[in-house]
Amino acid sequence: MNNARQKLLVLVGPTAVGKTALSLALAKRFQCEIISGDSMQVYRGMDIGTAKATPEERSMVPHHLIDILDPEEAFSVSDFQALTRQTIAGVQARGRLPFLVGGTGLYVESVCYNYEFSEAESDEAFRSEMQRKAELEGNESLHRELAAIDPQSASRLHPNDVRRVIRALEVYKLTGRTMSDQLSRQQKEPMYDLCLIGLTMDRTILYKRIEERVDLMMREGLLDEVERLIRRGLPRSSVALQALGYKEFLDYFEGSCTLEDAIARLKQDTRRFAKRQLSWFRHMKDIHWFDVTDEQKKVQQIEEISGIIAEKLNLPGND
Image (cartoon, rainbow, N blue to C red):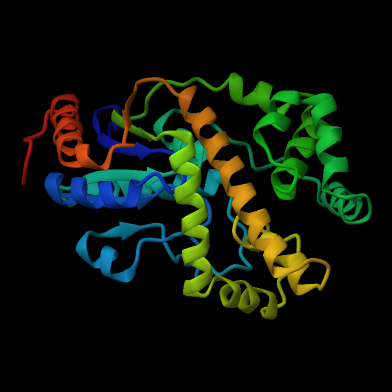
């Protein structure tokens, strides 16, 4: 199959900007199946903290790459790329439009363009050594080490994102080239007939929505969700427990911070994450951006976005 001719609709934007609601409206209009572009929604039992579409929302439109792995299982960007491309082919074989929706920039970009990843290079002893260093000297020590050799990667990774910081250090150790250098050399030629839509919002309002979302997650039982993961015996360094929305509560369960401090940290980390998401997506080409700050313009903007999709992908404008 010639991927260059396959159509792919993509919706990106920071957390809490309103991607889920818009994706459902667009998916129903254009006969789409939604593919999650989030690196953590693949894990079962991580529902509240990853802001998965609800079962009711998923019953309205087929969703893919949600709840396909247990939290103990590893999952990399190359795994995501391969699974998503397989899923895209399957959706198209059913005569429907694949719709990639998410906020994990590298994951989304790796599918849209002809990124190539090498999984052959790994050094488990080095990873263990770096993990021990983080536990003994703090996450900041690894982040400073990365900043010294690869400031660009350090600027896009939070110090608490220990797994990815270690991976960036590992790549440099094994290849002598930085992660940012390798990413910059990727040939960003589209793999599909793409239509990319991006959502943005006034920063103050977005941050308020983030704080409200965190408060809602707490009411919905996020703390219990984190505790269930810990009771599974997952190590602190596991992919699942290093995820945003989960790692912030580990110190609380270990008794080294208050619940109020953990919640405040989650709000701060989520605001920073949203800022990094926007920065990543701003560097992607060919995105049609929409400022969705004004709720009163929602219906009008859905029509405008639908018009762009119909024109770009040569589709009828409605069902």
